[in-house]
Every structure is written in C-alpha cells, then in structure tokens.
Length: 176
Image 1 (cartoon, helix red, strand yellow):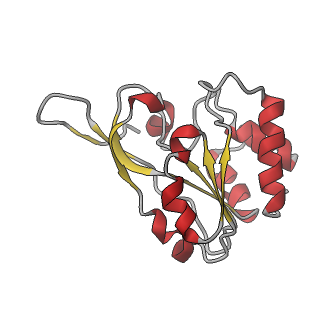
Image 2 (tube, one colour; image 1 turned 180 degrees about the vertical axis):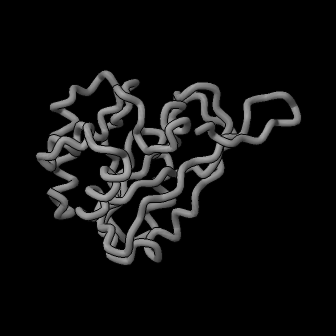
C-alpha cells in the first residue's frame, strides 16, 4: 500500500500523513513515536522497519514472539495488555526516515488522549523527537516518561539497556 501524500506547490517534499492511533478505553500506557518512518508508512504499520527494536522489546517483556505474528495480531496482543500506540505528529514534510529531517510538523490531538483512553496512566515518548512534545502531554495529568528510541538510528543504547528502561515503565503501568 502506498502512503497517500499531497504534492507541495513549491516542489518541495510531500506532505506525509501519520498512522491512525491504536487506542482503546482500557489503554493504560500510550507509547508516542514522533512520526512513522518510510518502512512504516509503506506498510501502514507502526514500527515496521525490520531493525526497529520496538516489537522485539515487547516480545522480550511479554515472553511472546510478536515479531513472527501478523501485524493485526501484534496490535491485539498490545491492546489486550493495555498498550496504545500513536505519534506526536499528524503530518509533516520529510525526505527519508530521520527525525532530524522532519519539517512543517502538525501535532496530533494529544489533548484528546484522556477521552480516547479514560484509564490512561502514563504516556511514554519513544525517543528525543517525540519527547519534544512533552509540554503537550504533561497537561494530561498522567505520568510522562521519555524512553530511549527503538529506532535503528539509536545505536548508542544496546538492546539490553533499552529493555531495562522499557520494562521499568511497562512494569509501573502493570503491563508486565
């Protein structure tokens, strides 16, 4: 499936649209990315890049091989445990997948998280670019945490080190 886009009249990068939120009334923790990378936009799946460590981290925490499951089943497993997914940006211009290339970003309606997920306990920002939106999520009245990015671009953190940080947050919210 090709990601729909709008051509910029000035001939610049296309305006890209994010993925819809994965939220339920029983969601207790929402992980917010910044904006989906090229692989995720093409697949229309959160964290679709094969080297992104998001699904392997959840697999390690939950003792289930999410990576081998179809995407729809991954979402069922995540939702059943109280995990929601979304991005801070609804749209932006970006060539490639690097957060540093994001331009003209438009925020998602993060203020609606409490209505969309009335049992929300915490928001976890997946990486630095997402964490730049903390001023928007801190007003929700829930815990707001910055987690190390699961992106392959974040090579300074080992998988095991990320797992410790992610597990602590998931544990605090009763997701492990």
